[in-house]
Image (cartoon, rainbow, N blue to C red; front, top):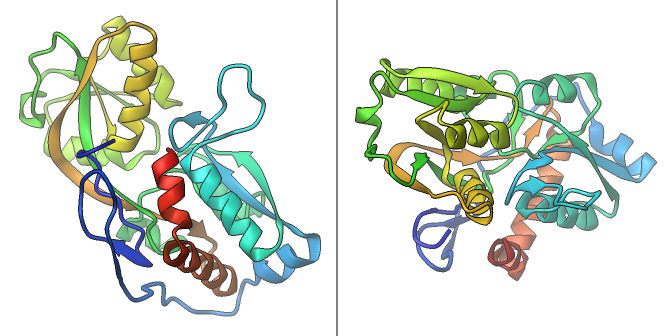
Length: 267
């Protein structure tokens, strides 16, 4: 992801794009209070925190061929958070359509599933400080002439249902046809089959999809910088302030002691 992804751990705001993230302190922004929810007390009693994660979105969270457990950037990140909270991590698979419902129902304690923190979503759930800043782009086949979102009129773009990318594309490319899928790997397959002319999501996800395509001998490329930018953050039930603050504290410590940079460099 060199040179194409601008990472930001908001507790230590990463202010530069390039080979290595560069850090500078920023204040904690999560200020919504309330006393209606206290998941932290229940988590400590059972000794386990349940994270809703992706099982099909490398390099953030996926199960590799022959594997049984998810791995990736977000998996390592929340495993470290759990260790610092002195509880065990448990992983439950979620997708853009069901992650908030699973949070509201109590099936999971925290969403950590490539979720972009938006103002609209902030009305329904609380967010941690952002841990990743990314740029929405397009991925096209290697022989495609598409280089910009402005060239999507009459073209078909593959997306995942429930993702913010769809609303962005409908605004930026109203003449494009949208194909919605359950997962990013199936969206990639539609591009490789020729059913779609492009896939659009964040660079981090596109990089994982491109790696999968490269391994399969398929030629694809990432184009059209600057469609939209957005921070990834963990999601909590409204007013679950104790848990949110504990997680933010763990992220702060990880940024200060270099653990975040180590996990980033790995993935």
